[in-house]
Length: 154
Image (tube, one colour):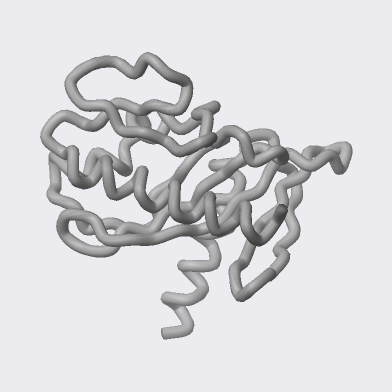
C-alpha cells in the first residue's frame, strides 16, 4: 500500500508541472477538503492553479489533473491520472492530441463538446471519433470541478 501512495504522489507532482507550463515551484492549499496546487514561475509569479477531478467514464472512473490560469478563465492543460477506457478508442483521452486541446481553452461559461465538425467557439472542443462518451466524461469532470474550485477560490 505505501508504494502505491508514493507512486500516486509522484504522479500528482509530475502532473502539476505538466498542466501548469512554466511552473518552477508549487504550494498546496487545502480548502473545504479539496487540495489546490498553486504554481509559481522562477520569479515567484502565480502561473495558475491545478487540482484533480473525477467522474464516471464509459468503463470506469476517470481522474484528471486540471490546470487553469490565475483568473480561472482558461485551461492551461489536463493530464489523465486514472482511466480504464477502451483501448484504442476511449483510451485516446490520455493521448497528447486530445490533451493539447486543453491548452488555452476558454472555460466560461462552460466547456462544450462538439461532434463531427471543428469547434467554432473558444470554449468548444472536438470529441474523439469513436470515443464520444469518454470525451464527454472528461468535459463533464472539467466543468463540474472548475465550478467547485471557483466556489472555493472566489
